[in-house]
Amino acid sequence: MWSPQSWKSFPSVQQPVYPDAAMLERTLAELASLPPLVTSYEIESLKLQLAEAARGERFILWGGDCAENFADCNSAAIAAKLKILLQMSLVLVHGTRKRITRIGRFAGQYAKPRSTANEVRDGVELPSFRGDNVNRPDFTRESRTPDPMLLLRGYERSALTLNFVRALVDGGFADLHHPEKWDLSFVVHSPLAAEYQKMVDSIGESLRFMESLAGATIAQMQRVDFYTSHELLLLDYESALTRQVPRREGWFNLSTHLPWIGMRTNAVDGAHVEFCRGIRNPVGVKVGPDTSADGLLRTIDALSPEREPGRVVLVSRFGAHAIGRGLPPLLRAVREAGLPVVWVCDPMHGNTETVVPTGGPWAGKSVKTRKFGHILAEVEQAFEVHRAEGSVLAGVHVELTGEDVTECTGGARGLLDDDLSRAYRSQVDPRLNYEQALELAMLIARRAAPRG
Figure 1 (cartoon, rainbow, N blue to C red):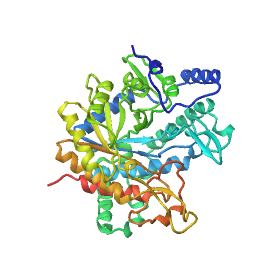
Figure 2 (cartoon, one colour):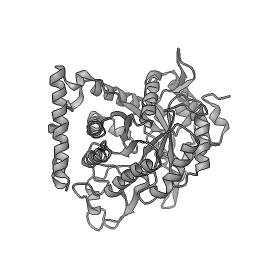
Figure 3 (cartoon, rainbow, N blue to C red):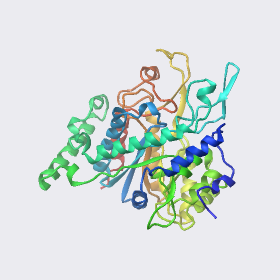
Figure 4 (cartoon, rainbow, N blue to C red):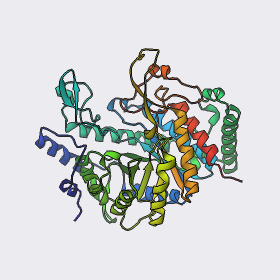
């Protein structure tokens, strides 16, 4: 019999060890009494949209930070992230001729899995930093000790972020129907400069034409839906925010619209799959080179025995050099089993590499980065592989920021390894900056445009 606590009878990984069990229980009881962050109505609406995307009727844009931190819960950072996602979605609407489902990696992405439970520096061993929801990054015993009160801080910042996002979206944020006001200075550096500019001009003309016909602005004509997501890691936190609601059957995880299970927690007989088995949310599952066809089918069956459309979202993350041989067998297995899943391409995680800049403040030091060319190559191959297998690529999942960081190389400006030290701010994984993210949307729109 499933319950929000039944996961405790299954093997669990990536869970912090809290030294004060009584404080943890008090914190979870308080969380369970607080209002939910999202509603069951929104969750069911997203599930319907995901099912439409799986049929090729929509396209999913899913993006945001690799890991949020409490310090960036401010209006400027949130607005910059929302701005680039909305601009990307407008480009994709124009290119794909489809409605876009927008999902943000925000309002809850405060915890991260770690390769090891502990970290050693100069002979001192302390718990690894697991994100602002769990502990603090400073390498001291006090900072690294998991603190249950941080779960409340994470809940509060998630609520603040979500409230601000909703207010911006409902208020017709940033006059986005005027692309000529976007920051497009990077375009001139690209061999496709003329094509990019033509695309942006066409978007502006189309929107103004629609406005003149309707006698209203696009913001007034159509409400923009925005959904949230985060990696489902801290099962105590997630179960405290899992509720039954009036007039709907089953349990809903009301901490987010779309939780996903990562590569480190996707064991079919593990606690994370057990927890997700019983909630009504759509659930994402990361799929990579180590995923077997048999294991994937078992996971899908565990999460959706009734084969509900829009319920299971498979996020492939192979890397540009492995997707061509790794993804097709999984597509065939799922198709032959007749399972209704939503396929999304994550071109970021499989393309992470370490470089050693020769100049700048980080000369001679190892730095994690991703090449824009590899990210684009994986997306391009994903389209081709799905087409060859008779499948539908329903969307893309990218780590990005609306700020001028230098964490990924390449793109129209041609960032090099030595440029990384100029503005590398991520605590975990490298993200596309504003220019790179918008350029990626333009290239996807160019690739996904209806043929003929």
